[in-house]
Length: 135
Picture 1 (cartoon, rainbow, N blue to C red):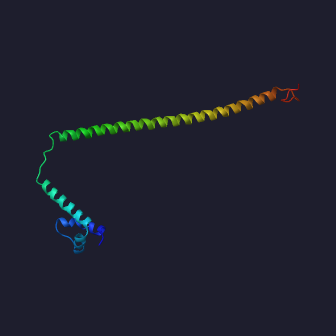
Picture 2 (picture 1 turned 180 degrees about the vertical axis):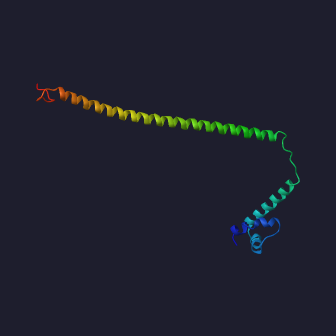
Picture 3 (picture 1 turned 45 degrees about the vertical axis):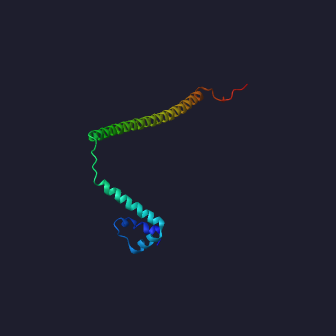
């Protein structure tokens, strides 16, 4: 038997309830013997704790409630800051979109004005002349 297999059954050594193959392994393996000693020591310590009673501090409940209230305030503050940040991003995105639309309309209007100006020039230019001025 290997230590890994025996390890799963070693807690049973506290109660003296070990399978035969684990008990045989325990007789020859110093590592598992040390582990069994640790289990027995922990069980003994836990047994002594069962007889002790520790009085909680008088202000324990009040302290816990204060901590919960502070935690809630902190969470609200974090949520509020996140909402403001997201709102700022939304405003920036909307501003960018408006800027793009205005720019596109300006370009279209400018193109339209250039076209109108060209038509006006063509209308007032004497027949037979061209855009090139003779020098």
